Length: 284
Image 1 (cartoon, rainbow, N blue to C red):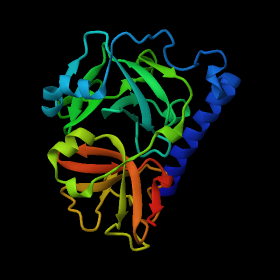
Image 2: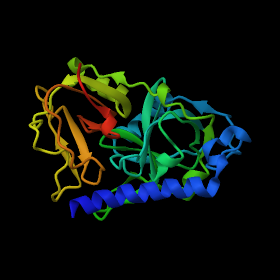
Image 3: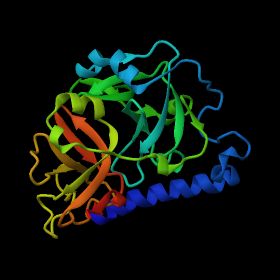
């Protein structure tokens, strides 16, 4: 059952990418040929661009309270995509960042990696979208109320998203260079606040269950599984993997590794979200 679930997600994403490519033809392969991308809103213009740090500061109280607020005035972010749903571990989300910080954008759509690869710069119009906090992590989307009556920012429809972003130039994955995680600051609240949601790399670690047998996210009652890092408290940092990720059933590596990913947070805990198996490398 597990293998069917994983293969199904990967197969669906592949079909989406193939369909987009075949339908759009040459304009998908090189949208800059005519200066117009087949995705997003090409009418958007840079009029009031702010930094991620400014956005976080403006809505700091909202994010820390786990609340949400509507952005009422024309405001834009100019950011680069650092994480998408390429392997199903980042689900209905993309991670974006500029030189000042990072944010999560929630989108109810699969196969986003087909048009927003890592290294793609985009302009995001924030007016009429919502900013909120989930476990102290800033997110952009629209309000959602769960079965317990709790309302928080979650996934916007793909139609709404399509009108709120513009693709800028061509993707260049080489620009998405991970920042090295400072293990000495793993429990530093300021470091967590400033760097959560960034593309980072933690070097020379070993996994507690890196025994050649255990896998990243064994099938069970949970949709995500946390794995501990040897020598670092799980109350400070974990590697979090969805049971739906393509590599969920891969064995956790033995020995020392360098681990790249989107370093999200939930309350005071760092949660490393691996984007795809290439993020897992043996340490030299």
